[in-house]
Image (tube, rainbow, N blue to C red):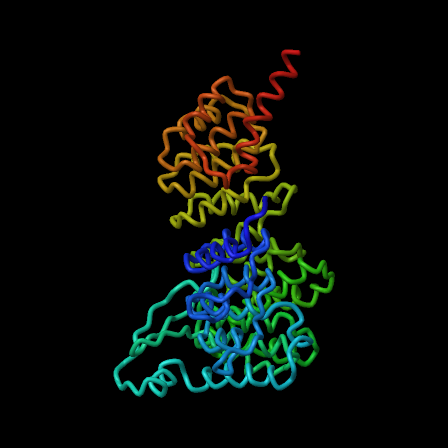
Length: 452
């Protein structure tokens, strides 16, 4: 029997108040009204916005809540989200086809508000609104998964400093194309790929594929400030990502550009990013670049080199193998870890690579041990030394490392497999579809077939 409407709505109010987006979605599926008023009489979407709760706001919006309804003060939930400066909130409320849904006057109002905050500055606008003269407090917080932003507070008012990103996103949504230089200027004050103002400017520029936009972007390669060049590398990374999503085949220009850039980039941080983007695709010059920088003084560059020297499913050349074996002894643990991963294919290991991985599986750094274990686990090496190395890993504190070891024993149909998975310990629901867990089942399936 379906719950009465008022009970569903009451549950929805409680879930929104508790910021429980999963229960919000469940209530909406059962028929709760997405525009149910909260205790203040305003739609519940306003409560999610005021609480910077983008996950609940998204659940309500997808469930039919009206982000454009006019509120008693003349604002809308979407306008309030823009005002608060959280790009995640705005994304949650913007919805599909906002350019078609919103009148031009409403689009302009949103753009003007975002631009005002961006040009004025969050702290200065808070001073204007509160008439307080003291300094604003700032702290870096997560705005959405993998993105950060400053939260700015003054005299009881709090906003997030993501208005640059909001302005950029709204412009793109409404078909406004500001000059490339303007978008670059919005991103570079925040030289961190996880900062939402940087990442949004980069991501939107990655969509701009006109010859004029490319010309303006390519010119950044020779900018005297390495931050500008690093920003360009980020745009190219996003272009590569989008090409993969949309199955685009026109990446040749970017690859040739990156190959030439990698030959003369003087900054280690920038060069590492250029190589990371470049190695996402196959190119005839990969190995040459890898050998060129195998002994680069910046460990960030050396961490990119193994990707230059290896290709999926193909054994590395003799020169590449020699360089990789040297990198496996690098003083930087991340370099050793990436090198261990590069040895994952082909699965028929040469004696030198097998011995190197066996050394790395005993590395002092747990991250290196994990990378080596993963590569050895999928290899065809069935020697006793490798098997006993996996057994030893079952004493590790890291549960994921124990799981990798148990999986390796399962691949080898070792009689200690059941005991190994007992040593792993209980796993959460996030492991329900983990291939390393499924290896245990496949081990039993093979053994049952053998006995039959």
